[in-house]
Image (cartoon, rainbow, N blue to C red):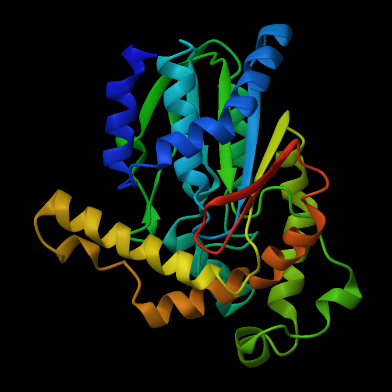
Length: 299
């Protein structure tokens, strides 16, 4: 275990984590890691782990921890992907806003991702070749230029794919009918936006879900705490950009506290639906308390 300690320390520093995170992660995630190792060794093929978690739940941090341990302790070839990195470009979303609904200019909901690119990337990572990994810059709210993408030699042993709406299923017509917050009431009074999002979820995202071999979920206690989590996440992003660039100039795309409050409303409908429908389907369920600590785990 000694040889992995510098990598874990680097991981902890990079993600600005408290000292007790590594102990907690080892206690809670070791059974998941062991299951992945057994499953991958048995299949001798690329294994894809899907991680669902609401805004600010810590799924990206969890994915990075798993990547660190699987790579440096178990010597596997692992790639971490975020559904966020498959967002459509700002110009593509503006086109959707003009032709379908203005709310689609804002990234996040089903219909604002390039699912075809995600499926192609997953497929390419399972066969020999050099694979470019798409990236999205949240600070500029746009795709990173293709020539700046990192690349990896495939096939890989394990793909970790995390995303807030991974595992979501479409809602019924009756469920879509009432507006559930002020965003929907004021800006989607006729339901066009939420019907389009639901249609996209049904037509395209289920194909992505079919590529996942094992599922884990970081389950928030309720939607109410997600605003505070997302706020912390945005503050951390702003701090990282300031540290990297020495000023706040490059952080123009970082959201204000008010903007974050409005932003999470875009996710409320699907997040609340996921909290009631997904837990019984996943292989590993990690229930969080209000402070994002794991209060309970179920396999």
